[in-house]
Length: 115
Image (cartoon, rainbow, N blue to C red; front, side, top):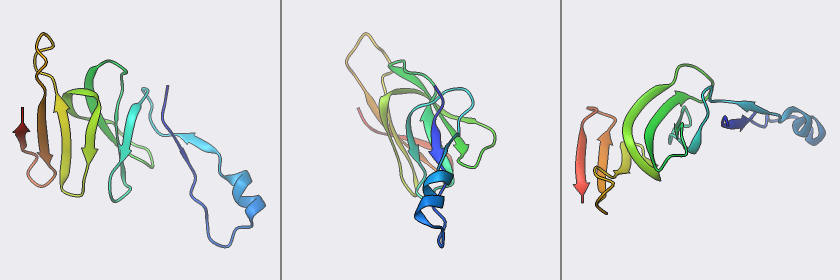
């Protein structure tokens, strides 16, 4: 199932025109689940699978290429901030141990914050 976005409301539009115009359009091409927009509204972060652990992807909300960001994100445990991405992984499914990571948007380095 793809993720959809509604066209934004434009100032000066009548309510009737705005309602007719606000039709959803698909943003993702290869399915998407557990999504979050970047703080600036330019990117959509999402998982392409409902599996317990799956890769996290990013693409421009206006359309464009999908980019894999990280692997192994647990369920929907990620948060996008202005400075980076917090996410949780489960390195070994046999043990109930999860790791919390931070991916910096500035230098693209990942740091383990907690286990």
